[in-house]
Image (tube, rainbow, N blue to C red; front, side, top):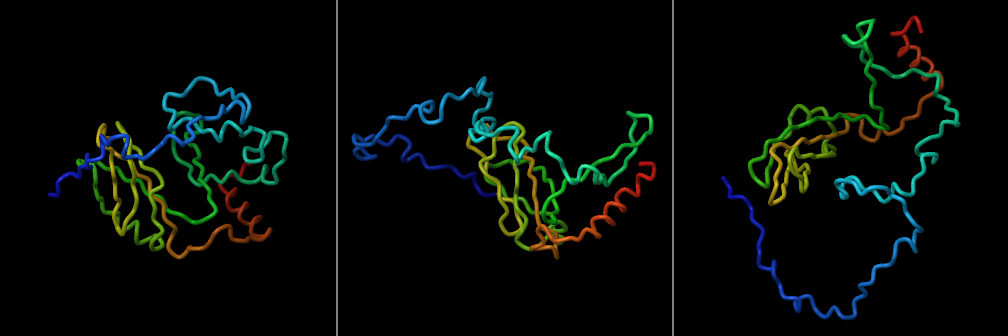
Length: 211
């Protein structure tokens, strides 16, 4: 078994002279209040790297990307797109509905749980998942550790390549994969007709005859 990779410490304590003459480098940081105006961001979050998004400071809830309560929607009376009705024990009917996550292209997702023992690991992808996806479209879209961070995770050939930090490595890593369904490469926002829309709504709403 290959030994765990170790970073070189040669330059860990390099003398200041090795960085050259820094006397002419501008080190003054402009006051952000003078550039952007005072920003009221509230209490600093527990994890500023993950939780603090400066871009969010300039977004208003009334902006088009968030929608507005006063705006009308042409699809407000259309189907709710529920595709699964399952038994449950928390209501009078004994059944509840689950809803699909819609996107502009046809994708399949997979979830992989990894228990790494080294900083660098290679985990084979499920061959069945690769078979139903277009070649070279499967990507890692998230990798979260349970007790520590993940340096990176990516797909190379038919494997997940996982890199962990030197210290505080997670005991388990949860990876989410996404790939384009085989035969549907390039099918993004395909055109449809009003007649197709009407028939599609009737089909979906056929599960609700009392609606």
